Image 1 (cartoon, rainbow, N blue to C red):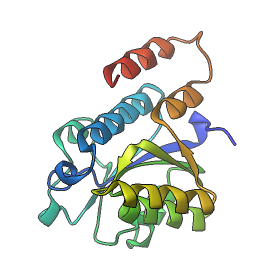
Image 2 (image 1 turned 60 degrees about the horizontal axis):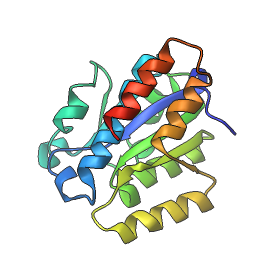
Image 3 (image 1 turned 120 degrees about the vertical axis):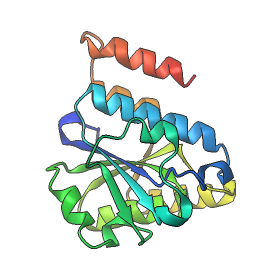
Image 4 (image 1 turned 180 degrees about the vertical axis):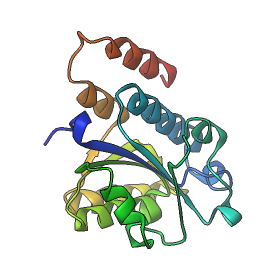
Amino acid sequence: MRLQSEQSFLLIVDVQAQLAPRVACGQQVADKCAALMQAARALNIPVRVTEHCADRIGHSVPQIAALTQPGEILSKTHFGCTDEPGLAEKLRSLGRKQAVIAGMEAHVCAMQTALGLVELDYECFFVIDASGSRRTTDHAAAIERLRMSNVSVVSTEMVMFEWLKRADVPEFREMLKIVKSFG
């Protein structure tokens, strides 16, 4: 099962001001999430960004907020966004069957979101290097559970180049710039 840009949407989960600094490799996770957002924009792939209890945890970190367009933020209090009233319908309205999920914390909100989307028959792709938890053991446990639940575990570059499919298109140079921007 490969990613198809015309069937995908990107879901950035809870990369928020008071959470990100506490996550192991939090800056790297935020950088990779931003890179995925830039790649999605270049390829006209819908982006949605969740914010969990933003009044307490803060809004998205500046680099994510700067890339978010009006109407893309999904506020929630449930850990899994598909449990939040109305959010599953908002995602379904995108008309896409493949969900690319990245964000924080991998073992709580991001994982529960991915599992909820699987329950709704989405093909889910969890971006291992664009997700994180405060403890690396929690991140590892989330990845193991997601794999057992038929969620594909992928990397940022895997997503970008599967979306792109080929090197002889103008967007290829844009992808290379994005890849170089996060090392």
